[in-house]
Amino acid sequence: MVAKIKSGKSLTGALHYNEQKVKQGKAELIGAMGYFKDAASLSFFEKLLRLTDLATRNERTRTNAVHVSLNFANGETLPIEKLNAIAGKYMTGIGFENQPYLIYRHMDAGHPHIHIVTTNIKRDGERISLHYLGQNESEITRKAIETEFGLIRAEDQQQQRPDLITNISAAEYGQVETKRVITNVLNAVIRTYKFTSVAELNAVLGQYNVQADRGSKDSRMYARSGLVYWVLDKKGSKIGVPIKASSVYGEPTLKTLEAKFRLNEQLRKPLKAGLIQTIDGILAKPKTENRFLQALAEKSIQCILRRNPEGRIYGVTFIDQKNKAVFNGSDLGRPYSANLLSAKFQPELTTQLIKEEQSKFVASGQVSSPVDNNTDLLDILFTPERDAPVALHRLKRKKRKGLNL
Image (cartoon, rainbow, N blue to C red):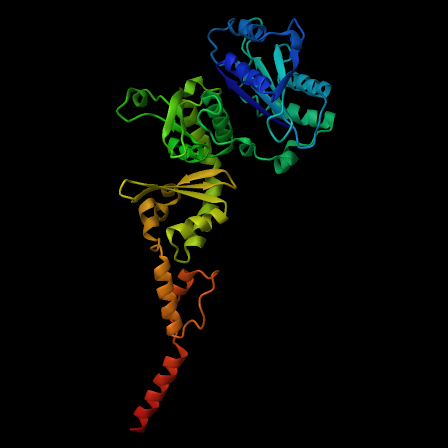
């Protein structure tokens, strides 16, 4: 079982997220602990009021929303009674046994999982500390539950669990509520990828037609470290109305992202050398830009080249899709910066040029038959020239005549 704890400042947002899943038929409320009615009898406001009533007893604590997800391995089909029992054991283990909480079973991913919504403010207004809760109490409780209920261990589950990012579709304006689709994409990307700047985050978000925007450098939003998110159309242009980062569940504001940047800087370090080795191996032979991008794609590495209006490459970002790590070219080293990397690309060969070069090689005797379609012409064009057998024979004959004189 994989347990994840997220904290936030909006109980309404945490509850609304799960209730929307219920409306879509992708989740169901299976338990309401510490409430005065059965789960099926509760209205949205009754669910929320029970939590906000406690939260108001400590107005100094702004982070008062706790959202837990317990993720089970593929094939672990658990009945509702067992899921509620597991949730109860877990909440007791992390010190939330006396808190009211709601349990939702979700059916929107490739693996079974439940979400638990609660608050960390107790009846007397005291705050339950969330500091290191996920690393300490949660880990101890998780392991005990795996043993008691015979669940697949988290360590084994990570090997078989499908990556949650595969369940996220690219945003299409007008198809789904803008805020909801942006939230889904952001939650998956931020949780899964290791990026260290807004530009690197956008390199990944662009795959899902979403973009983070700080505004122009002379704007008030930029000066105040503001951040909004846009949906992009098929041409990569912003469309619709931007959504403020503070209004998205999880609050992926610039301040929140900057903390993530610092963590990711350390997490991606072990992956840097392997990526450089792969790139160097591909560049060992001369490549056109298209062949370079194709060779990287075959290694599950996406390369994004940014161009100015004149077509010159001014930026490059590598996305290691296998390890979910994002690197700006210059972060890998000066040889991988935009200018030096683009200088290594050979010019693209036109069909006419390919035919002409093939004819030259055949005529010179260096190629005895037309080049096979699977042969990389660049491998031929840039190999050391070989002496044609016919020319070598004529040279030897001239040398012998000279000796006879």
